[in-house]
Length: 446
Figure: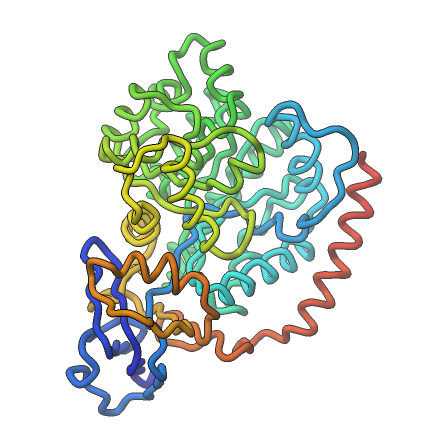
């Protein structure tokens, strides 16, 4: 593979110390970054050179928690009065929709979500999949879609007891089978996790099986936690203080586990999450849309919890999530001491830490030794840029600008409105056809 150099743009490295090079350059060899710095200091010999033309060069973004299977549910009609509880939202929409999925519709959901993500500069997806009537082989379908688009994917199947013991076992087996596949056929752009739905849909026995499978495969557990009040109510009915204590007592909360949402947690729960070194993913738009509340992100960060930024499948771009994640806490708490750059802590630092546990080499920063996921964004800073104001330029400029080119492991997968291997017109046509059929069957199930 010919080395690649992207140069002649304002380069942000991200990370705990976001270095700025203006103009800067990055060199990628065999998918791994070997040099980053001032343009004149980065060797271009024997390399393909991409000129950024003064635009911004940034790392590919990481979506720490998404649901590709719901892409084609966007805009679906839900007649009747608004749901009164979070569980009712699940029952009326998501648990009805995921039951309709087969391998063909999983594929079109994935391709639609992946191409949208790449268009927005997202190069890594940590996906949480559900298709109870087509569990076997479903993660392979996602992997094939990832290979077609060129995106980086960490996939898990969402195990639950809600559809009975047979479906639960099928979900566990799909996680096991995919992990074994990755062990036998290592793929640098693929990773696996052991997925679980919300705690209130998982019995103690099933949670123990998830833990045993995580031990067997060496993969992290990825589940929903305290998104609505249902988890806590179910845990207290079993005699536990909270969801966090239930999951901790059963061995689920462990180093490297991924807990999506963590909205309804208190100080004691937060201390437990920090002690167990659990990743928490924040999805503020989904929490707002479902009216479940907001995660106490400032308190989680103060306690030492690594908080990451995800989308929950609400949209492909992380831009609205990042902007809302900063504003909602400062606004709701009327606390000006909450850092303006809080979203950068999540997207630049938290997501990179999470990615480092899933991929080797990992995305998330433009640093030597990291994987070569880079994005050229059509933002030309109108004011000086340095590491102390890089967050402001990212939040107020980069996130609002068009993505020009996207590179994953040093390979261009999207550039100037076109994908390397995806026929966009055909994809749009097939997705529309698939959505029409899914929606028709969805209405019949009402």
